[in-house]
Image (tube, rainbow, N blue to C red; front, side, top):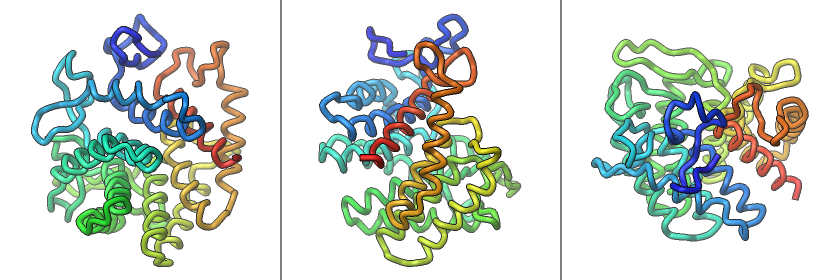
Length: 316
């Protein structure tokens, strides 16, 4: 699914019905994390470098600089705060692994960009899409917390912790459901809540709480992480399987691994091991590509690469 001429990627295996010549940025948000996790297993293979080079081709010089959602040389396009945040999270993981300054520099660029998405409408929080002031979503606020916390851990600069806590408190006040899951968004200016639940919103907030416990040692964050994990199992794990969006589930795994490092409860790890094996058995084609449909997608392959790599890391 890689275009060797350009170093870019194709979004799907369907060369006839494809929407664009190359992939939107979002699947690369999944692929960059998967590549980092593969490098954790074997850094000699340099899985991350070509993905990094592809993402560079989405760089937008519009101030404040960031990544747009499609290849810059092919057209001007929209920018989303969450796309940028997922990339920053992967780059911060890569920096912690390699100490290559370029990864940290790009993550700080994303942080400087994302904080321009904050205002006081609905009491605070970040918008989802740059220039679109109609919603503030969990998917752009939970990863904002993760970016800020990781930057705080690396730099010890107070501003990052202050931003993390401000967004954390707003997200909990505005988008947390009573049982511990997280609604999708609040609409602006009406204040109406989009009450859909997705595994990735839950996973990112779970990870945020586990990280906060690791940084502060305050028991309330561990208690909240465990409550989120319990609520997620009750809501999402039905008939011995998870909902069908692999990448959303990969983000849920990230949060549960962060909690597992603390409390060593293997329940979710075992769920993911069984789910990963089921998918490999039931949803794999002859080319070893994964997905429930004949057309296979880059984001699905990337998500499962990440899941398998993370589970392998735990087994080592």
